Structure formats: structure tokens, C-alpha cells
Image 1: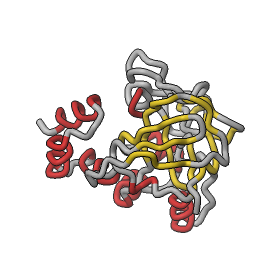
Image 2 (image 1 turned 180 degrees about the vertical axis):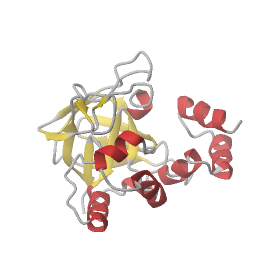
Image 3 (image 1 turned 135 degrees about the horizontal axis):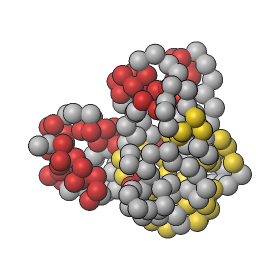
Image 4 (image 1 turned 90 degrees about the vertical axis):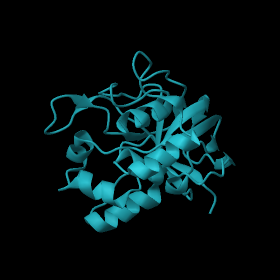
Length: 215
């Protein structure tokens, strides 16, 4: 199967039931998105998708979280286990893909998508807003145990992305350190965290954050 973009999604600020602050997690499919490097998390443009809202720029957005991709196959897996249909964009992703092993991607892997070049930076870490949005019991725990989070991407070459655009993996580093492994390091696996830090494969902002958690 050829890897393609199934849906491109963006959202505006909306109130999530049970949360005090509005969030941009509720994404809807759109005809196209324009992506660019939003700069740093603090003081930058927020989302890498023009017109896409972010509620908390302290925790979301910035260069290494510019675009979020989730495989349609993973949404379908959850749909079967939750007994409900999950629409494209349900996880707050900007790109819903098909035919691409998003959760096998290595950190530093690069994808040519439409006019753009995107680089895999790391996992999505579940939060209270995500849990309230999904409205499933023990969601953070269940999502964490599954460990397949989709991937946050940096924008190395800006441009437009549309549904149906092919996705080509143009560079795979070959170090074997994948996004799910990085997620486990983020969630407290100190041995894996040491592996990532020693390998120096992470973007500087992610490397420094992980190092700070090691004490």
C-alpha cells in the first residue's frame, strides 16, 4: 500500500468539558493545510499549521511539535476496542495517514509530504485535556500502556499538504531508536532515557528536557 495522507485537520479554540481553559484539540478535516516552522515553544507562532489553534503553548506547539501525525490504522484499532467510530482528527492530529507505519518511525526520520519535508521528533504525551476530549475512563493509563502515540514532526521545508498526497520516507537514520521507545523514556524508563541521551539523536530542546528529568 502506498503511504498517503488520508485527512488534514485543524481546529479553533473550544471549551473541553471538564477543563478550565479552551483547547485546540478538536480538529476537523479541511481541504488543505499550510505548514511552516513555528519557531520556539515560548515566543513562537504556536502550531506549525497556519490557522490551527493551540490552547497551552507552554506544553504544545513549537518547532519539535509543529505537526502531529496519527495513523488511521491506529484510530481503527482504538475504535474496535472502544466500540465506537473515531473520526479523522479525533486524537488532535493534523495529519491522519494510511499505509504508513507512523509508530515505527525513528527519531530523526524525514518524510516528504506534498510540498513539505517533515522530520520525526518524538511522541505525543497524553494529558488531562486529551482524556476529557476522548471521554473514556482511565484514558491516560490505557493510552500509555498501548504506547503507540503517533509522532510529532518538525517542518524542515514548508508548503501545502492535501488529502491524497503521497508520503515518502526520504531518510531513516538507522539507529533503531523509535518514537515508542522515546515515549517510554519520557514516561520514566531511565535506562532508555540514558540510551537516548548517550546517542544524542534528539533535537536539542527534547534532549535538554529529557536530561533534566534524569536528575
